[in-house]
Image (cartoon, helix red, strand yellow):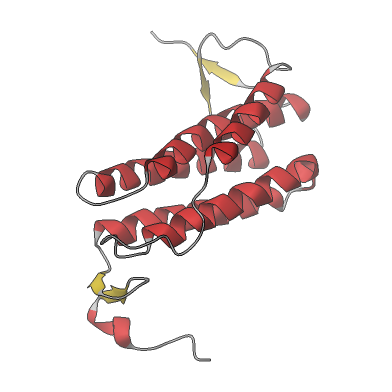
Length: 181
């Protein structure tokens, strides 16, 4: 199978289920941002310090792939090509947030990203997640997008924020606080 088709040379791309749109279309932006997030979660999985979270990180990637597949559909009253993330996926993130949160000190100010490559990459993943969420919300303003995708992305950004703090604590990386002035 050839990876190239040349059909996108005109600046358009195919949607799952048929139809073509410009590569700058909001739908492409939405699933492209989710795809980027999947890659960043993969970067996090590549660090030995995240081994204890491998199962949850793979689950997150699986849920994000489901989101991307659904976002790549034309959205015109199509049945989802794959199973949607469900409330269990959101609940799993909430449970993980609560579990990690028990070991973290109370947060009284903003934290400046940095201090360690893994912690920084986790912050980048959080920012990409927020961008993906905004992109999906823009798409949802004019087209059909299952609400659970927005909820999952929102909770995932919370998870990544807490995971960043958890990793910094576990690795004894100082979190530089930013006091508002």
